[in-house]
Length: 112
Image (cartoon, rainbow, N blue to C red):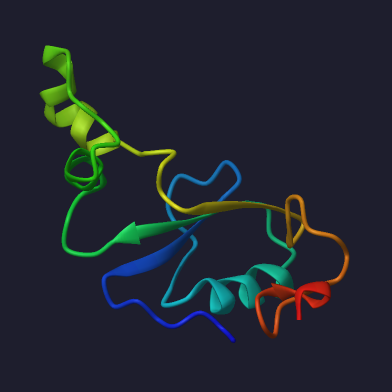
């Protein structure tokens, strides 16, 4: 069964060496179809809506600001968390996947 769209989050693709995001998607499956079609290299990350990652990470207890600069605008504005759900892609293929990856379902064919 394909993943259900979660209105509390969005998937963001950030291409290799890109300064800005290359695409925003309502589901990982839709993003993977686009990534595969264009044979892209980069990272697809799930972001919470209506909050910053900094605040989300603190709320989820993934991060605790311990130093004064952790509360600075520069730090907060650039903050990311490895705790966010994310996938790495190389030439349109998810790292760690076999060649049996199906972009129609977003799943490995062998898992069906």
